[in-house]
Length: 104
Image 1 (cartoon, one colour):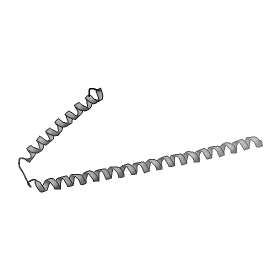
Image 2 (cartoon, one colour):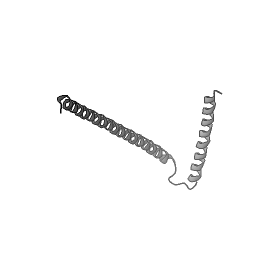
Image 3 (spheres, rainbow, N blue to C red):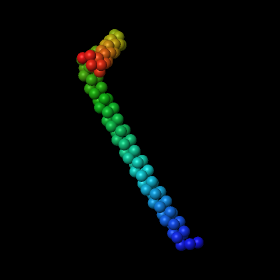
Image 4 (cartoon, one colour):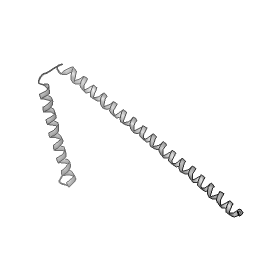
């Protein structure tokens, strides 16, 4: 075997090892960043849910102090509130569509 052939073999092997190490580092860094992003998003979602829960509790406590403890007609009132909210949402959607179309 000639010396240049052996030298070329070792150069190729070194290149392959370096590329493999760099690829491993790149994949490791990408997975690390993905893990960080996932953890941050979970924390953000957890904080959001906690804030929503706190506001609901405040609203329920504020409403509970002024409303009777149990009201049999309350489910009917609740349905009326839901219907009113749906109607308002429909109105907002209509206005938004008009705005998007330039009919304002």
